[in-house]
Length: 239
Image (cartoon, rainbow, N blue to C red):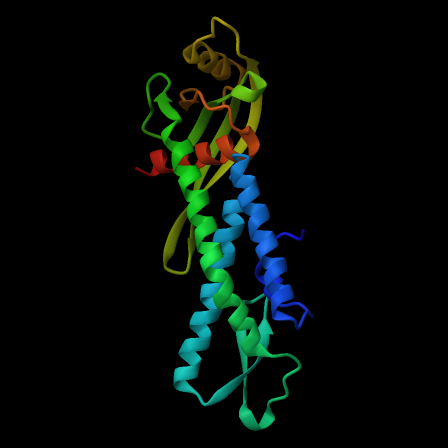
């Protein structure tokens, strides 16, 4: 089954039921990942799909109110509706059927997004965040440690939080880099001792902000724990 995206609504298939079957299969595959406790990239894919669909629908509605033009097609990459005066129109496929398909699919997409958000919230609530040592004033760069229970490891990463602008809005971006991992043993080494080792090994951060994320969840690390930890870290730094 192909990964569902905005392109899934623009195929050569003209049979509405066939398109519905194909798109529903893509949504069910995403929900199957949630059932396996895998959040990423499924939830991000659905949210981006919903954003693209809303953008196309809003543009269509706004322009239809202002101009007596008809739909000619779509620029999928730019997520724009292409309009043309009715006397010049020459449709190669039924535009309205695509919007019919979109309207049919939206409730399934919304339900799947809600399912993913519930899973995300559950994971976030079951991950604790602890400050390791004294927290410096400068928090935009440092380290964080995450328990990887399926692998019986403590994953240690370096992070850098940067600020960038897009139009009139400011956004934060988090860059992470894997440093090393420690085996979890019956008697765990303290996070403080690991922090002191990091300071000795990497002298460019003499007093780094350091955080420990711990959880009893036995969920996939790459697809679930790590993405949730990054979001939690971003929120904590920005607070």
